[in-house]
Length: 593
Image (cartoon, rainbow, N blue to C red; front, side, top):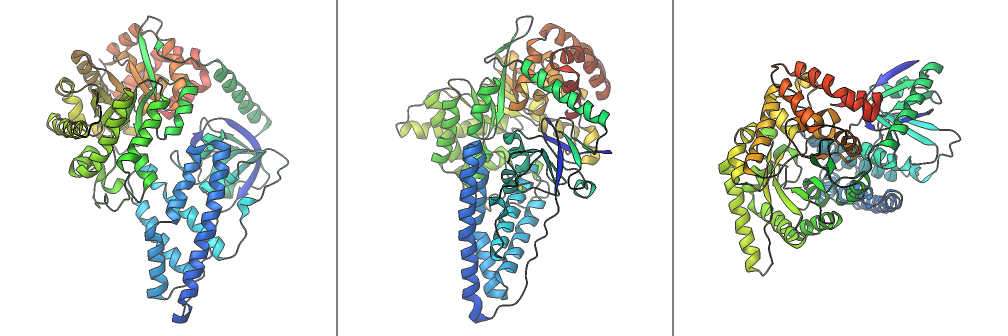
């Protein structure tokens, strides 16, 4: 009996027999081809691409039928990788110039591409290297004339937990079979496609469990705790009963959580708005189901990823934003302009090879340096905003008033362009994202020239404390209750109130009940959460007193140590959180913050 820990990526608790899938090592043949054999190698490569395209299309159609278009889009990305000219050109050049067989030339090309992804700062983009590996594995299998295992059902007779070194996206969807109840892998994180698909399939999953594929024997009983990121191997009867009891408690609490729609009102009559953070237009169905009141953050860079290697056209922008605006049915939709650049993006046009991309030419800085890209996005946004009237435009990484005035002047220029073309325009709210300390310190000045403010706590915390949130060595310093962070949040909220403009917050802090209560006490009235956390946050805030939260935070702000503040706030708010969502969920909330 042993318990391992990893990253909880899909909630729930599952018990089943282990199906262990070992590390798959590609055996790639390597030999020289003669000149008269070159054409034959080229034909082999193109035939493999054609068959891979047919398999990916079938997988996409199957996924669309099971989960919807949003998740099928994962395999659109695979199709684009397969059709990428760079992949094809470099493989063909390896065959022609270095006389490599096509398998080896392909492997060398993929290795170069993956080495680029490994250096990317952004974890979401870094994990997209798994999509390239997936396509590569498929091509090598076809070239080796091996059968497609993903076309075969497993015919399982008992509940099964898949334990693997890694699961590629196509494996994850293939494993959506009867009796598979959980996933555990050594690799992958919260932004991997395995995590995305596990959530869609509603299968508990824990990823990043070091050495698990060697630790577990085939058929051994395994418990997957997708709330706390724990995996129990050959649990005792007592441990199994404990996990099953916790599962029943989670299910009971889930049935009792607030599933109402619309604004939330605290017990002392203060109206709050709980919106959703989304990445795909298809997520609007989920937003409605969980009671999200519109969209507090749509990350438009995912549109750029979807059209790669091309840049999205004005019409691409217009069509994507139109779908979201229409689905919101009049509720506010805040769309963030491009927040990628330097090492954080893989388009050739954006690749800058910067030493420190997090503080380099990214977000609004990049957009202002490339007005052609920014213009296409803003034209699409302004057209939709004028047509529907519920779209607000959010600009990330604003550092001060001078930069903000440049953005407003550029938007005015585009508005004039559209008006000259006969487009009927209405006033579109435009706001800066407060995620740089200089912007928070100048929030009063920015508020005077803005229609709204939106706080991004993830980057604001990172920049304020000089802590790389992806660096485990300094992760202990990343505390949202640090007094400097709380002061910046309070000053920004107060600045918006003085200017009589809305202030919203869309970072991870708003997706945690303890963080949401903290923010309520600082004066925040508009929250934007991860959709899976909306029910919990709504339920807690609905039972909270705004006056009491304000008193707690007034006392907390007198403390000068972040850990002391956190413990003080936790002690003050925990009884409410536990009463509403129970001990187990309250404990998970603390561990994830």
